[in-house]
Image (cartoon, rainbow, N blue to C red):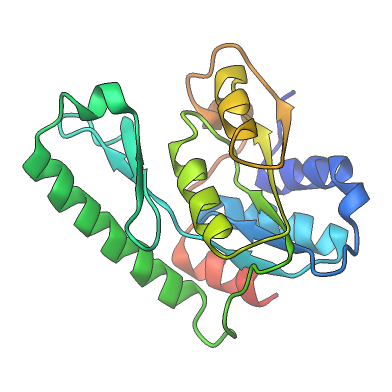
Length: 207
């Protein structure tokens, strides 16, 4: 399956989630930035409110795009332990601090003017535009679970099988439209996969 763009992926994902339509206490939670585009489509289709969580990737020192960990909003981290063991501890400490600060900045920016966020007792569906290593999604699940939800569901357009099974151990349910054996990049599954800016996230959060 190839998605035209994130909105198309959101519509297809919503079609798989129709059983959650209008769920009392249901909540769509998206990972910024790209996940918010999908989250808005899914939230509107299922007639549920939209909110966000903001985990941040910890990249390798020599290759920042390669994830070796991720940090949740409160500073808790999840790691690829084999990669962590080869990393400079001073770099990791500094990067965790930097990414925690960026997570807080984005959370405050994107949720400015909104009420307090609550997951307690709710069915929370966590969405993103795709999952590769699963580290940032696991950090997102950590944030949600700290809030005491009744049920945590992960829903994404694309996720490799190994990561899918890892997420099944941490969420109550995982939905992935595509589970490719080889995943070189999430963008490869989209015809149009542009960068999403802060202004678009702010607009979608207030639609």
